[in-house]
Image 1 (cartoon, chains in turn orange, yellow):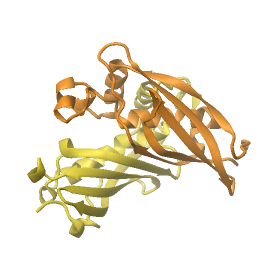
Image 2: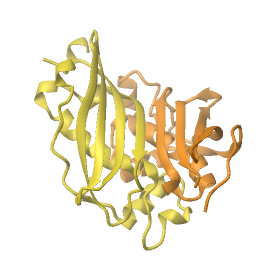
Image 3: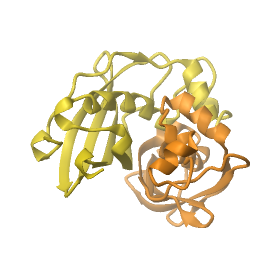
Length: 135
Length: 142
């Protein structure tokens, strides 16, 4: 079963809220226990404003815009991001990250999709691009 | 001597086989706030695509443990990440990951290192390549 796409098409989007609990869950699930993701002192010692989200948490969450649209995650052929700006996660409450995506090219039944991830209107991922098989 | 261009091409033994489990897939999907995708549930789930990082980062350990390179994870910034998949990882796959140093550019005290990790089943089926650019600051500069 093929899916339909056209260049310029918006794939929608969603807003995720990252909390310290999100980071603890992702640390456990991924095995990445770098203390900059749970310990403010460790983060500030490296010059960060405070605990930051795992870049891979942002990258993985962003791909949901694509997999929610494509249905079957097996359609995703490739995925690239640059980690441009750390997402600082406060000890109480959380930080919102907004995700959206647009089809930028289609060739040989493969759609190239550009993904936007912003927090407080600042881009947190650069050049985020996924390729999705349409047929 | 710290990491330099002469280390390009170096690879490390593959990691011990890791068996992808339904429980780990469910845990990872939940950590991505994506527990409701039916592909990640049921008796024969696939893993969320970026689950590959679990295997890839395990392969990083061998490089960081290489005393010749003088690397430290605490002085490393993950600059970018690329995945290419032949197929999704599935529950029941026994997966090994092998790291290769693809490119090194030294700029003063900073080394920009490109590594690739090939994920394969223990039967030799290539599943995914995870390519990362790391920016490493040498200890002398700290």
